[in-house]
Each structure stands twice: as structure tokens, then as C-alpha cells.
Length: 418
Image (cartoon, rainbow, N blue to C red; front, top):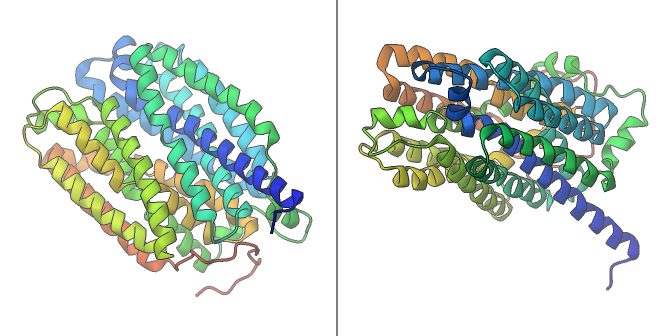
């Protein structure tokens, strides 16, 4: 039986949507990680002393994460009230302009402020893209769609590292901004979510209501658990890999561990990890089982890294790839969040959850520094690693399996707390 022209057109639209969402996440990851990759060179060039490098780097990265935190709320609410497409266009325009401005900074405070603005823009990309894909594809296959978004997107880290290798750090920011502007034109052919359009017609349904999300105990607890299962992800990238040069000195590394190379190899690993996690979730018909496996793998690989005395830069790169495999459950993590809530809150949740995980790097960093002062760098990293994985596994145990869940429903205004 041959497919009808309408079915073929629908399939082409879905393929285009997944492609554009994937390329959007590619640019998102490039711009999200470019500071971690060019941190040392850029801070040197604007006059930061070597002894202040780690703390100033944390300050700027935390400002970016604060922008992601605030932007996640802004874009999430807008996505449920005004549509997923508007968020995709608005967010990429903002972070593209911010990244171009980053190429002109001359001092730490301006650097941090512009990364904050870039963070606000970056906050809308992933949540809106995943929401569109999850709502458009059949429930049995949506895991493949979100998997492809993550796999293609995460190679943005490779692009960021390669661009920073051939260009200076200022031009690396210009490239990131330029890629975003180009992507705006590619998005002209994609369509709005049918589930959102149907919900938008009903003026009686509250959309993007933070009161509905936070004012009901059952929803609030579920929402918090969705965030907590992702905590190990950005601790690994934002601290264990970004601070690789400093960690390497404590491990008596045979050479300087390059954070940029480590992040690039880790994100190659994350891409493969997302591919494996996506296929495994389809095979096991479960997202929870896959995240459990990957969290335990993360615990083992990071423990090995923190105990690797005399590590060489080459060994570090290989190990970064393996560590990346372990935290390659990002697509499953975001998909679980999308599947837990109704259409009128889905964009709010799917956009804020990953950005709250990124923003959680701020309190994680502050707590990490407390442990560093008390116990030194490596013991502090151990404590944070075990603590965050334990929290993630507990929260995972509190969420219901959502693999087979039908997403075409809305959250009612008043739902009894359970």
C-alpha cells in the first residue's frame, strides 16, 4: 500500500522539523560551550592574572548560567502562551547578537554581562525544539526524533573546538553568532505544533501558568524531580572538564590537560551516548532504566578520572570521551520532562528543566568551593560527584515511566495534590 501525497508531505515536514531542531541545537551547543573552550586564552588577553583564572572563569560561566536560568522561565512561558516557533526565532536572534558582541569585550565584567545576555537567548533553543518534535512525532517513535536532535546538536562542541583552533577567540564568537543568523533563514519552512494550535484555540485553558506548575504540590514535586535527575550532567562538564588544567596539576599530570580538547572529546562521547541511550530506550521501552544505567556509568568513569595519577593529555582526551558516554542521557532526560506534563505546560517545563540544570551549576560551584577550601580540589570533586548522582537516582525513582504516554492532553487548573 503506497503512502498518500498527504502522508508523504507530513513525513517531509517531520524530517525538516527534526533537521532544523538538530541544527539549532548544534549552534546552541557551540555557543553554550565556546567560553569554556576559549576561557584561558580570552581571559589572558583581557588582562586576568593566572592566579585568578579559575575564579574569574567560574564567575563568567555562572553569569551565563544565571542567564539560562532566567531565560528558561521567559521562553518557557512564551512557548506555551504564544507558540514554540516564536521562541525558536526569538531565542536564536538574541544569542546570535550577544555572541557577536562577545567578540568585542575588553574586561571581565563586560564579558560576564554579555555571557548573561547570551545565556538568556540560549535558554529557549532546546526546550522549544524538543517540545515541537515530541508533540509532532508518533509516541512510539518520538524517542528517535529527540535522539537525533541531541546526536547532531552535540557535535556543536566539536565545531567550537575546531573553530577555536584555527581562529582566535574573538573570531570564534563571531562565527557562533554568524551560524545563528544563518539558521534563522532555515527555520522559515517549519511549522507549529498541532497540539499547541489546538490548545491555543481554547481560551478557557490556562497556558504557561507558573501558578499551575508551582502552586500544586503534585506538579511541583514532579517538576523538581525532573530537574534533579540532570544534576550530574553539568557538574561533569562545568567543573570536572572545564577545570581540567587545575585538576590535572593535582593528579600530577604529565602535561597540561586542555579543557577545550576534553570538552570536545566529551561531547563526541555524549553524542554517541545519546545515540546509544535513544536506541536502548526504544529497545527496553523505558527511559528510566536507561538513565539509571548511564548515571552509574558516570559515577564509575568520573571516579576513575579523579583517581588517575600521572595522566597524560592524550589519556585525558580518551577518558573525556568515555566520561561523555556516561552523561549521554541528555536527550532522554529532556524527553522525560516533556512527557510528564500536558500541552499547556509542556514548553514551560521542557524549556525550564534543562536550563535549571544548567543554572544549578551556580549553587553546585559555590558548594564545590566550600569543599575545596575544606578538603582540597580532588576530595571536593569526589564529594560532589557522589552527592549529585545519589540525588539524581533518588529523583529518578520518584518519576513514573513515560515511554508509552500519550501527550495530547492538558493540565487542569485544579488537580488534587497527592
